Length: 249
Image (cartoon, rainbow, N blue to C red; front, side, top):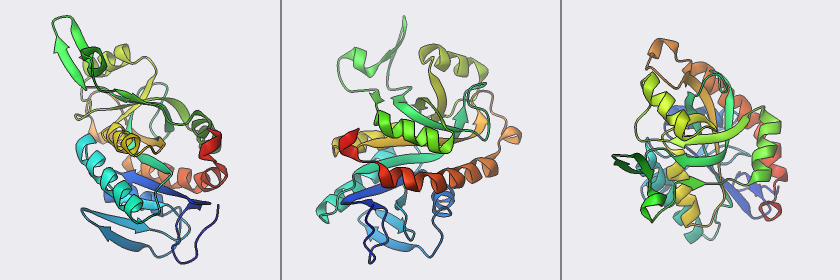
């Protein structure tokens, strides 16, 4: 990985990495893995944070729609600047499906799936693909997923994206029945992946589990622990991203 001294960007040769979180506290947790003063770069509709020797960081907003719009703005600006990103990482805290993704653990997506994009019918839910258009799943590079799992201890599986956080045991059971490999849920991954796909850029999703998917119990949430796990994970990810070659995956 060659790092242009004047930019301080995480770059593999000509490869640049964009990390998109939902909210600033998640962005700042990632930034803690790259100590030093952060530069701020403003582009239409977005503000990028650039820690020394780290990736570009974007607090893209909550939910798939805003996350997609903000990520697309960052990707477009980079392309127009003549320095396009070669990888987008969607990250942050999220819910984990017990018992496979306990609170404090990490999940890396080998499938990023929209859990509620489709139609309800008398016979049950139909994903948008069964309606004859669109997509509901994006597949991150398999080799990169494996390398991230090995470096961070994250478990690989499906990460679901929804516009509404699960708040009942019934909904959690329904999601697991529809998606048996689901390990975690978040609100941004699919939106980020849609923007990345539109630009032909690979995407990765990494979640630190802050709460179980199921009945909404704020007292059981461990947001601080999950944010600390996120910082630790990105401290271990730098050499993985350094050695990853998108042409080999």
